Image (tube, rainbow, N blue to C red; front, side, top):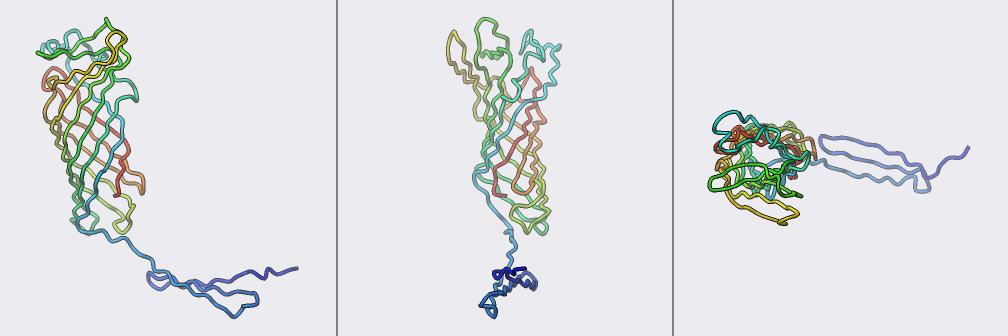
Length: 255
């Protein structure tokens, strides 16, 4: 049999967080030895860390608990039913841009407080030809024109606050979850439609939307994968309709 003259033997020694690797050759330089020392570095989070420009990409929808048989609903949306407000599956979106978010250590970097400020952007795309009229706000179905696109776009400036549990504080991409609430204020809203008869139309108004948005929020961290979710516990309209938006999606963040 033949012996591979290039075969090497390696000894590994661990001392605390140091690793010493010692290589020995079997060729002409058999007496030469190479030793390398590696020091494993643990991630040490700071007491206060800041993350800029967090982005959420998700799907949005709402839970409709409107009592359509009441006089208030009939005045705001005459002749409308729950099925009239259904959204196109997978077409309604939620995109959030958190301008800045901070994480404050509370208990050994395992329990933290997270807070920040940013923008929530919602696009609700209707299946039917839902049309908002203003002064006063009235919602109905337009059966005259042929709609190619119909959406209600809403944007809020929002401040979230969450209690964060980080189960691997010495790892930069760890595992944990956060839960809390957010408070938002309506910046603007508009309905955008595209019809074969009138082309692209934009109608800017508050549409009697509630100026404040209060939501339960949460996030789940699984190493490099981060998920988020939100659910408004108050309807987004001031009167007539009880529709509470929710969203789920991916979060692009450094921690």
